[in-house]
Amino acid sequence: MAREQTIFSEICVALSIVDSEMDFSLIENITKEDENIYLKELEKRGKTKKGALSIKALNLSGAKIREYLINKGVTPQNIIWTGKDKITGVVSVAKDLEILNFRVSIKENANVFINGSPITVFEDLPQGLFGQKKRGEDWFIKTAKQELENYYRLCRKTLGIHDKYETVEKFYANKDKLYKKEFGKKVADIHKDKNEYILLAYKKVCDKVSNISSEIFNQNLSKFKATNTSSIALQPIFHYFFKINGIKYIIAGTEKNKPFASLLEDSMSWTKKYSFLNIIAEPKSAGQPEVLLTFLFKDKSTNTIFKISVKVEIRWSHGKFCGNPEAKVYKQWSYMELPWSENLWIIIKNHLN
Image (cartoon, rainbow, N blue to C red; front, side, top):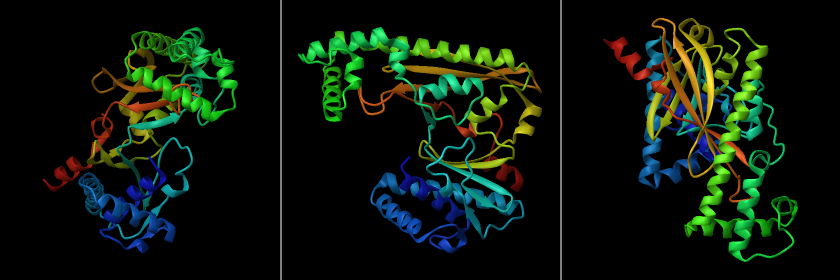
């Protein structure tokens, strides 16, 4: 999400928590520049039906947090906005707002919760290495060099291109960004025309990248488990993906444009109720390289084993053949549906009853 949208969503929820439409003085750390960004985004969203609904949803989320805090005996009057300190950073657990001992993380339709390199997702994370931010060699060349080469040459042949960049590696070595961008656009047009030979060659790239990426993840996880035999050794990996913190905190905002607000268990309480058993990476057939990461858990009270999956999309960052491939991790679930999440709407309803 763009910086301006992030600032808006966090301040919007904060204002609703303090029950104010525009009193920025009730929120610590807001600068005049932040106020202007908020007001500009507020005006922009107010001009469309979708934008107006997004404001309403964020307000409802904040109002529900306020109601929950009041039921806890806390009247939220001053909030510390901490989100602005990490908007451009990378953290495993978000903490955007603080109200006394309560922490709040804001998510606005945030289905992407890890946006990194394939090396980070498939090599570092399954070995318990976090925040490395490595780029490394081109992931498509690493995992599907021959398939990529065949696809590239077929694209050139179809487009009638005959120049000195006859191999993928020579193409990547070319410093002419405009040339690369134009080539990427032309390849995209071939795809739009449904050229069956191009689509088949690209599918072979996707399948190979998906398969090898899954194998790399599973191999690295096996190595980690072999040297970390404790029953809780895998938990830091799970915590990173699912944003479990050392303390219980509220996560709120919008999912699929609908307001939500939930309490997420702290790590110690979670460990008393559940066991994290394993992660399995499997290739997923799609229109691009994809991997499904399935997390296996056990409910200790019932001995029931259940699973929750995330999807990893591996793709060029700026279109076909442009930019180093990136890996985006998408959640496939709602925060309010997680077993260790408590829906604030239900909590408050039970309290009133």
